Image (cartoon, rainbow, N blue to C red; front, top):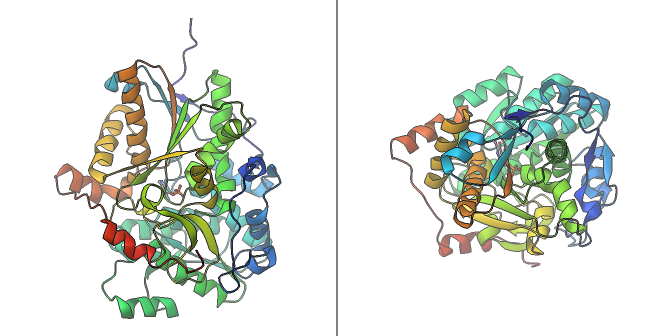
Length: 457
Ligand SMILES: *Cc1c(COP(=O)(O)O)cnc(C)c1O
């Protein structure tokens, strides 16, 4: 008889991974290097020191070390909320009438409500270890700012958070949570930086964007002594830290005698998806699992993979960061106010961009009402109220399961449930009251963003 798989499966503390996995070490074709916009030449590790702390600059550039030890202090804080459960969505399977087995890795079991804490802890730890005295960052929906506030409070580091204005106004309680953890929250664009003042001058009514908030945070970091900027997604170092999600998932599935046929995740800057798929992608790259599929799900309002260009671009609107080769809508692209704030970024992780470009990954996009339909169905079946970002992955997983219903294939689906949606109830209300619009950018809208791409392409 088949072994009964539990609804929620936890590794023990002893079984938790002690190292992160660096997928680049197993990529025969490497992502393109970061470029210095002034010279057009690849940046060196030393050139990153004014922006990132040394250890993180080192991780950013390291494409050869396969496994990297998780520092003891980081593991100690991980153990407060990890391992996270691998869940079997029995009720959702039943409701869908699908022969597929649906698993999800739930990362919302901490106060920040998302996977972002996994990288926040590492980044705050390395900053403290290097003797830095403060950090700056940006936050879109607020999850990253919350996660970093928690980590900074734990390690005793002051933090300035530039919060995208639309979220600042929509989510006052997010701000309050950050303040509980001593985070100093500033709506972006703000008049506290040169770039913020310039953007406000050109466009006084702007609701802000992640790219713009990044510019402000970077400017503040480079103009403040002993201060560095930290970023919650996109970068190689963040994908490295998030590999804990995939490593735990893979180990848990191994113990249960399972292996996914398809892995689905939502893609904003690509960190949760990159972390979730990393150890599985290893098996595809080395030929162990050639038919395995990986699906990135993004909002139709900010379609970096599905309608973007694979090009060198700035990571921020202010054009002060190094250039990354990635799928991008252009750093000047300001998406309409999609509620999944964490997915409103113009670019995509260079690692995932390369894998997608080389055909190792697929991508789909959905309008937000389709996404919220999936969120509500999932909440009723599984009792977790998902974040709108996470609901993109749910939508993708449900559609994979419905395909199985048509073909009769009993596939094993794994998706990343990145967080909870308690601060997104305004969006849920709009959906439930039928007031939610699905804005999809026209080709003309996208052309405006592409026009902001740097000329070296
Ligand atoms: C930030 C966020 C995302 C998207 O970010 P990635 O870097 O693409 O993972 C997804 N889900 C939640 C809950 C988030 O907070």
